[in-house]
Length: 109
Image (cartoon, rainbow, N blue to C red; front, side, top):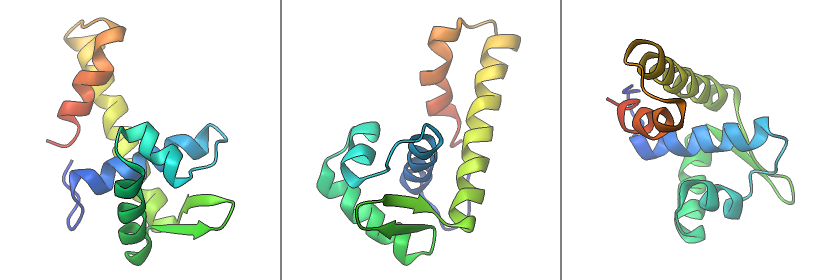
């Protein structure tokens, strides 16, 4: 899903923050980096950009949280991902253990 003005990386970071927070975890720069398989420095740079764009808010010792605009975008991305997973499993009959990775590749198309 193309969201005007946001790259695939922006969307991936917003989704990662949403998923961390939805599990009750602190979305620290290191947790975000680990979730996305990037360096902590890369995560810090993107967190700064997303904060400047008004999509996230950072609180010391609390980590990162989504603003209402960031949450709206993250929910769109997560919904799209889950719909792609259902399509792959229900329609194309892919096994559940295969659909996540494939949905990751398709969700930004």
